[in-house]
Length: 119
Image (spheres, rainbow, N blue to C red):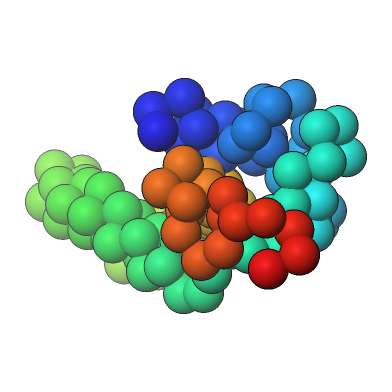
């Protein structure tokens, strides 16, 4: 499962590790372009978004408090910098976490992964 999660983080097919998993920013391909592994079984739903929010919140909230107490900047400047930081970090993490969620489902054979094609 660890190898599949690494491949998912890199947004690669959890089976072969070389084919791209995503066809757009968050759209998972139906099949891997390299090995033909079916990926349409995934049920990532809102999981990656929730985990992204938790990670960004736990990283940025203490940093926001610390920077406000340490440097005492103007609140508009601070809020602008942290808004851009939160959005940037969220946009970076979201497709990678979706890849990890799909890879975990593939590794655990959840939601139809590992089933014969005609079932």
